[in-house]
Amino acid sequence: MSAPEDRTDVIVVGGGLAGLVATAELADAGRRVVVVDQEPEQSLGGQAFWSLGGLMFVDSPEQRRMRIRDSRELAWADWLGTAGFDRPEDAWPRKWAEAYVDFAAGEKRPWLHAQGMRWIPNPGWPERGGSHADGHGNSVPRFHVTWGTGPGVLEPFVRRVREHVAAGRVQLRFRHRVTELVVSDGTVTGVRGEVLVPSAVVRGAESSREVVGAFAVDASAVLVTSGGIGGNHELVRRNWPARLGTAPTSMLSGVPHHVDGLMQQVACRAGGQQINEDRMWHYVEGIQNWDPIWPMHAIRIIPGPSSMWFDATGRRLPGPLYPGFDTLATLDHIMGTGYEHTWFVLTEKIIEKEFALSGSEQNPDTTAKSIRAVLKDRLGSGPPAPVQAFKDHGADFIVERDLGRLVERMNELTGGEPRIDVEDLRAQIVARDLQVANAYGKDGQIAAIHEARNYLADKLTRVASPHRILDPDAGPLIAVRLHILTRKSLGGLHTDLDARVLQADGTPLPGLYAAGEVAGFGGGGMHGYRALEGTFLGGCLFSGRVAGRAIAGAL
Image (cartoon, rainbow, N blue to C red; front, side, top):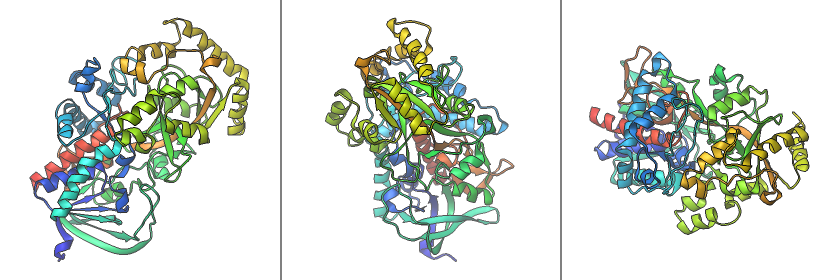
């Protein structure tokens, strides 16, 4: 028999965004909740804290003010062209996807706005696609950066949960690592696990795995919201899709070490089914963090469209693999070259306007909600301060006035393997530069730059005016070595539209629910093969809300 403090209505495994949303919804409905998380309290909020805070809205006031014509129908067409659902097990993921697009076009923004969330007025335009209308990509800008970045997304839900903690409806148990789901007569009835030694490491840093005790909690329902696998490179390689060739031998981590995939395995041992493990989302514009927090810490460059992109041998990537257009198609191409790194070659004029860095800590002006700091950093001369810091200290950045010396240092950085020929690189740059004299031409990337500048927000704040890379007045020249960095799991625990985890026969495993990245953001993979961006945090918000309300209604 469990002691009173070891029995609750719902156990939530994982204190990230999805877990916090679900906990807030459950406690609002009067349910008692115990949240367990293997990390210390300073990491409450999980990966969402480190994010840029981008959210996909459809036909938002911000879009309309920017004269962007969006609709639920256009967004759903973009989603289907991007997801590429093609498996029998995609039935529930597709239903989740359609429900999410309806949410993004309807209740999502008003629900968040009512909780105090606000957004930067100019929506961004990632994953532009560049193929056919029915293919991958966003037809219009939909990426709404939250005022306050990731912490701004978390704040309403942390506040709500803390209020319920004070009222006695919620317990937060940190340093509790679940290793087993208890199954009694075919129903999940609780969790068992290990208590880890207290840790004072800073948020996101690798914490000790020393075990100092054991714990057990029983409940009427268990909700798994433990995140993905991006911090576990062994598991990433094990699940690496054959369609992308051999898994990289070297990767950087875009997520903390504790994003380890442990709970996927625990849930499967209890009878839950995981699907689409081979669908994942890894970026190709990773740079080594010069001031790292977790092991192999990478920062992603969020590029404008103007940098020239070369593979490791110095050959220009083919169209439409331009910066910011198609992440996974670019990854596929890179893995086919036989090398794992690529290069941006650009000018000071481009880096000043087009380089943004992903992450709350790399955007201190927006994170701090300082209009003055945003205007100073984004509209003043020179790159934003965090970009300048990487330019000054980053191991992957090379700055030179002379192309010959630039290429010499590029070869030095890689040990000359493979060696880039300076004259071959120069010929490609000169050919590109000849195309900028007119507002039209045959170079697809130059056309894409002109197209991007038709969007007023991009023209003013995001896309440099077309110019010659070898123009001395636009210099100095800059080369940036780019790495593959791990980020998101697109597959996960198979769930129905009530977030109930399904078994191999398609029936729910009683008592077990999942939300967030561990469930592929809904259904076991609502994104399919690719993502439109602004949908990862949004998927955690949506699936956490669905799960919390469904469990509350079922108890």
